Length: 518
Ligand SMILES: Nc1ncnc2c1ncn2[C@@H]1O[C@H](COP(=O)(O)OP(=O)(O)OP(=O)(O)O)[C@@H](O)[C@H]1O
Image (tube, rainbow, N blue to C red):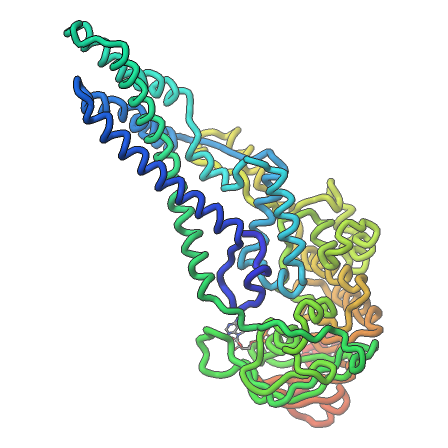
């Protein structure tokens, strides 16, 4: 199912589904019952016929059973199957984007409706072609050998009837021949259809289980009604935040400790804020709360003076841009990967290239043969089985599956370009970079920070980092986290003068640097 947002937009909801698939599964199950009922009545009727009704029924079953067995046998032989239909590939890619893997990108990027619309478009273009995996579609195809056996075994009832006439010519009647022939054919057709349907039963039952689970899922992050920006309280300098005695533990988390404990702090509009602290101290969790990916357990968060949960989620997220090291590339073209920073302008190639430049991805795009139309990690639509001895087929499969060879740092630049595309949408008042630099070399990191800072006008900027240097020195506010609490807040100079946690973390890095150069 392509989109989590039409029913379950928050990260607490685990199950995805949509009305389309519910209807498809309902139709499928109705079909299964219909075929089952039809088969039972056909068998009862034919078996009750005088002059060999039971034998004829059994002979009519030979063909579909034999075909199914032959199909199983041919499935254990080597094969390669792949999809060449572009609408099919696109619908598979969009389906994949609707999965749990991309949940954070979809939610924080506010792109759920774009994904759903594109999926509907691709599905419509596919018409009656199924968008099930090639693997499961192949399970229902036939091969020439099973075709020959199918044709021969299909005539068994006629051979039986002809032999009976030769043995006992007095039993011959055109009417009885026509009736029995018709019923044998009907039984064959029904059994074949049932076998074909059964190959999809597991897939359908699995999806149905998800649908039923969905009915029990309630969105914990409930949408508000207040539009953002607020006409009287919001300023065009950026978003303001006030955290009042906030505590939070992850739903289903194994730790007994809260990830955030009694945290109170203020972030003013237009400030450059840097959050530092040891691993697991709660830095990223603060960002997730400010982005309203989760709601606090106690205390409250005010945005521009109003409780965060009062705002419409889509408005709030439209005004926020989030760049994290965890963000992933979608199985779409680079143009779309970058353009989705601003779904309304995804086709604006000039803006996409401008964002690629700002994110430091322009050089990479130039290097690639298909440029911005390259799909770095395509969705899997080719499958092979038992190809060890078939080198040509094996290398064909490997070429189909091959991902473009780009480094982690280059991928990070593409994700950064998506964030700049978001900046270009104009309405961003709060931008976050949560350790985006971990995969970047020092020069790329410096350029990224510079560009983010330069684009900072009218935005509150928050950086989460383990590296001290140009960022912390420029920060209006540094929040030093430890065990879910802000142990120190202030400017670089103020915190160094305190001689506490911040100065200790800073000195570890500064000392290493001076030893290196000394
Ligand atoms: N999705 C999650 N489910 C359960 N617990 C989580 C989840 N994400 C983080 N935690 C826990 O919450 C606490 C705070 O994590 P958080 O990611 O905010 O720390 P951090 O300071 O950003 O760490 P790092 O520097 O390693 O990125 C940690 O104990 C972590 O194990």
